[in-house]
Amino acid sequence: MYKVMLVDDDYPVLEFLSETIPWNEYGLELQGCYENGAIALEQAEKAMPDILITDIGMPRMNGLELIAKLKEQKASLRVAILSCHNEFHYAQQAVKLNVQDYVLKDTLDPKDLEKLLQQFKASLDQDERVQTHQHQLQHIVDRNKELLKEKFIRRTLQQPIMDAGDWLAEAKSFQLSLEGMECLPILGLIDEYRTAKQRFVSDDILRFAVDNIIGEVSSRDGSPAVHFAYGTKESFFLFPYLPSLKINPYDAAVERMKQIQAALNKYLKISMSFIIGERCRNPEEIKGTLNGLLASGLQRFYMDEGSIVKKQSLKHGDIDLFSWYDQASTELRELMLEKQTGPIVSTVRHWMAFLKEHSFEPEKVKDWVLKLLLDLKLKLQSLQYFRSTYAVDVLHKEILEIDSLFELEHWLVEHLQSVIALAGEIGERGKRTEVVEACHYVSLHLDKRISLEEVADHLFLNSSYFSRLFKKETGETFIEYVTRMKMNRAKELLDQTNHPVGKICEMLGYDNQSYFIKIFKASVGVTPLEYRGQKTSL
Image (tube, rainbow, N blue to C red; front, side, top):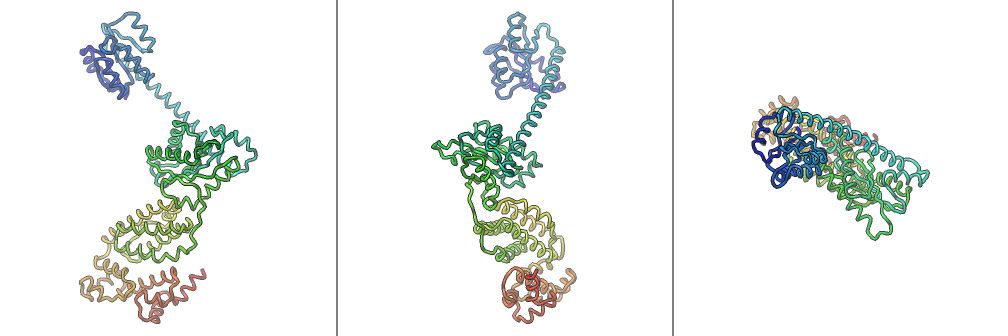
């Protein structure tokens, strides 16, 4: 609705008009009635009206002064003068102030004023349509300009620079003037891009929002840094500076990036990190540095959220990440079985710190985490009272899209906590509580000898009754279940560690290695050494 302000020192006139005219029917809102121009001006500074109907002769500030001051703030303001003055010089002043109508109180008919208000609304609607169309056209122009800038930076990265002069001229068309200047290339990265994209529904909307905020910051402060979008999650900034200046260009660039960070966080709740490249003196050096920034995957993966850092050459860890797999898998399995959501955070944080300390290759880290989750999925399913609710392809896709270790940490914590919550609900709705507790007990004591009597005592049940109950609920005897769980664990240890068979035998609570080998072969079809040999040859 358009807001209307009535101003007149004649209170009966204000009361008559406010109550006689059906404002809402015309799509209008009566913002207020004021007895002089000074009070009206104070209120207008809080909320500017779209339509002003005012008297001329009033104390403190007359109507003509009020119109002049409001027109300075809002040139599109529609104004009608409502006055008992019919002198020619008043009409002349009204024309100069671009007043749309001049109505005499002596001949006032509310119907005439209603027609005038309808005309005002129609003209305001038309202005709004024109402005919307202009904004759409401007958006198309801006969007095309951003696409041209992106094509320019992609050509720079992917094709030879045949003529440095032509390159500099094209850069200048994008407000990047490098004559007599050096340049710092900077790579900007949207932190937790997956989450940001979900909030903004699509890549296009997210990109438009980010480009718009960066553009506003640059235009407001006259930034020398020119922004080039590179897809949605990545951006380049080329920061020109005079090499003779005594100021440190890195410090100036950091301050500019902090301003962009603050604006993105304030208006979009988005965090962006930056990697600053080396100083460049010509287009070829700029090209080389930009490509180097794009290739800095290891540094990018281990950066903290909201970082602004210089490019570094990091070396990935030289120890075998998968030699630590069994320890991580065991810790997570125990937390899942005990349904402890609290310690999940500290456990995941511990392993993330370990990964960062050794700077393992990002792809290897993702493979490691994916294997942990897939093995955990199988373990939960093998306990029968758990039912996994997440698909392998979904896990794989989500992990591949993660760009940094801190994002992986947040994602992994949320994922494991949700699995524990769902598993607990499903377990409670599934088998008898006694059977659930028995399976739980077995999983936590695979390193010991486990007897039916021991577990029955733990559950305060008669051993014969417990044996029949377990068989009825699971379809296998308790001893068969224990053996199956131990053999599954034996295969994990054979797959994931270099422990000798004798050591694995001890780790599973068997005193006799020959007996263990016999049980393993009966369950798996081959001996432990043959099983390990088959896996090694694959």
